[in-house]
Image (cartoon, rainbow, N blue to C red):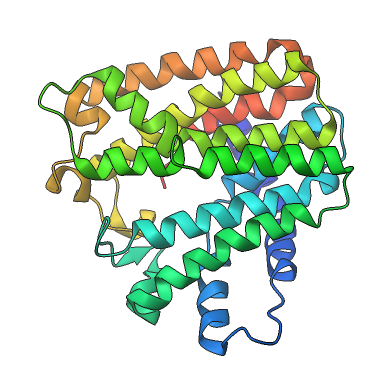
Length: 298
């Protein structure tokens, strides 16, 4: 992918982010009974600076399947709410014990641990309220709620995180590592694409193509994240580096080495792009995005 193409894709991201941020801000209008401190913490977590990768995937998947991106905006907001909740909880001392996220103190550092737990709880509930009140046919609302619940549940996001904090087994291998990250990272990337496709009324062929693409993109994202933890700069990333190896976590560079990790990521990018063939030119942005994720520096 040329430098110009990467710059064009980055520009597309920058054009979408204000729309997504505005929709996120509008999605949270605290009513009577929501304490002011909780409302402040929710806004702090939900509107923190970020790539908004998952909402963008929702919108681009909807477009690739023939829908207008705006129709899928409630799903884009719901996915980002779940993502924000997961980050707030992951950063807690009982989990990854991080004090910096997206260049700012983590939620529990600003508002306290108990309020951070409640903030995550609230964001998860808000995600399903956002889907449940979306202006879609009832069957689409139900399918989207079920898909997001599965992705965020004990077999996927939460299960992957549980295995991750337990630490590597005695005989760590690539299959074990990818099992964790298909769930911990990949599930939310996969469901982002699925939600966009469901809103668009995509057929089984398109849904499967996006599923295969999403499984690979999730691993590319995680490999890149692991490499950035080894080789990145804290100022650029907005979070501590070197913490995974210090904590003894199972990572791609730790298991395979840096060069083999890069080679694995490159292979997965090729497979992800190939998986999009049934969508044709409509998936051009998604195809480019796989390379963009591989070459990101934050």
